[in-house]
Length: 336
Image (cartoon, rainbow, N blue to C red; front, top):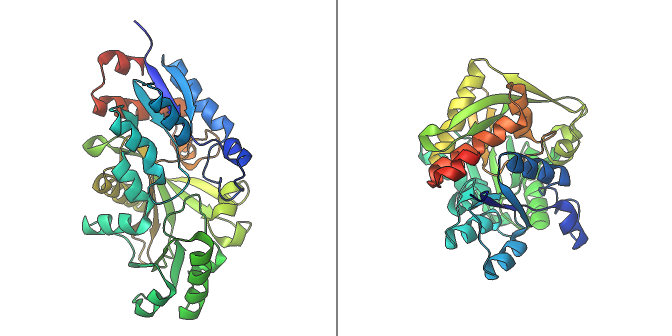
């Protein structure tokens, strides 16, 4: 019996840098360390791993007639609101099971405004918000100040800076104009939440999904600009304290995170970010259904480690969920 063949899709930073992309453009992409760790785990579980690389490589391989029993996808994509959805959409077109969320969910989750509308309509608590597509939209804004502004469809803290917290309309006008010009996409503006910040790790799908743990994110005086943005996330040692939280507020955060995960239809594994309002109630911020998997410095592996589990445990739970929901043959499921 042959070993099940897994195609591994990813965006390697050095590959895209070699094509001329800059530091900020490649901030969400993966290091060789991450690729090696994931490929190594898949091989250790009995899979034959085919390192495909980014979406263009996948397109070429599919066009050449190649197929896989499963695709393990962590591609962030390059442009547009559907960039994270491209690989799973291709897999769906060719009837190839794919680990993590489907194309609909990845496109929805990337647009923070649309994701907040869905969770709000599902009864999940989230701060009042507006999506600003043009500077003139600010005239109709009906939110209490202060507010927080950020690009509607970026990850890794891009565009989250000191100026994101706006005390009045003048400050918001300046920040929104800057973000609209720099990122060429709408700006999400939401009522500022002054309380504790959490990220909740989740594994599983639907009713089988469960929270791994709630990790509190505590910035210290060395955090860049005093916010959990790109600069701090890229250089977090000595600037951020990650703390396993187990109190009543943390449990409430886990419940909100699970409700949002299920409402959005997320699968297999990822993270939900939350922040508490002035009364200490956790509010949904955003979901990351393609969470970073660097074993040493990505939030999901860090919180998994704080909860007492290792990287192998996390990978096994993700694979178990993907294989079980995909209805793959027993020989594939046995490999995991």
